[in-house]
Length: 70
Image 1 (cartoon, rainbow, N blue to C red):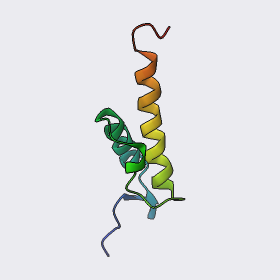
Image 2 (tube, rainbow, N blue to C red; image 1 turned 60 degrees about the vertical axis):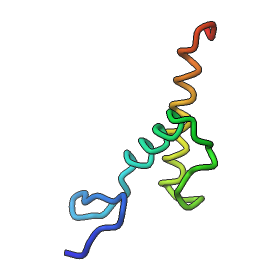
Image 3 (cartoon, one colour; image 1 turned 180 degrees about the vertical axis):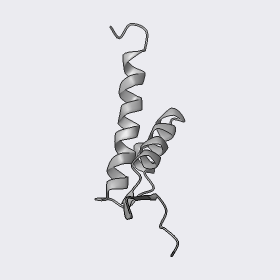
């Protein structure tokens, strides 16, 4: 079996992108106060979008729990 590319998993014999890893990387980037421009993935790819979604999800959740935000 040939090696799989980074971020992919076998799903019923089909190789599909693992959306969890880029999403979690985006969350970690936001948590560590990295810039949104730090996205390491190629623009216009699913991984790029998933990283941004994780980054934004953390930022949105962080804003919801700040004192005085509600």
